[in-house]
Length: 184
Image 1 (cartoon, rainbow, N blue to C red):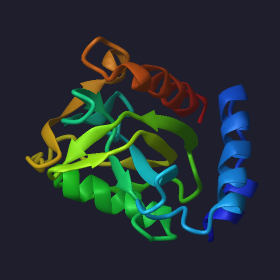
Image 2: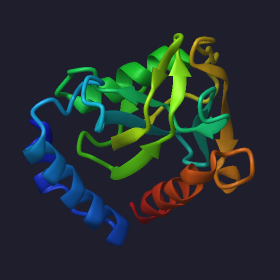
Image 3: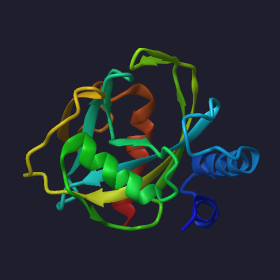
């Protein structure tokens, strides 16, 4: 399904998602190039809320740019199928194969990304229009990480998802994802 149709069909969980849904749709209707980093104002990203089979742990990576732990994900880079982007990013960032728990969007989040240097190039501040999917993985599998993007990967208990190790702006996102998971 195309991104615009997926966003239109998405039922927002709270006021933040209601406002972000409107933002996402206006962004799509304003810019032709919303799927690649060539759009300097922002672009779509896709992430995964990866839980273990018992739903007691979630997967996080230590993101070098954000200098803290965050759920795995990455840029769409022109790919319209954001679910496949989320699955690919989890495998690239952690080495894990995942099971899709729902092929529909689990959450949405517009995130301001601070200016940074990546591969020697200055990247201006911009917005990530993040589409999050719910996936499952085996918490006994060996974890790997990409040293060019992160400094580690680990499973944490859901109760630790908002502690001080987690990137500041991600704590409320984690709380929202956990709340939605508990309602399933």
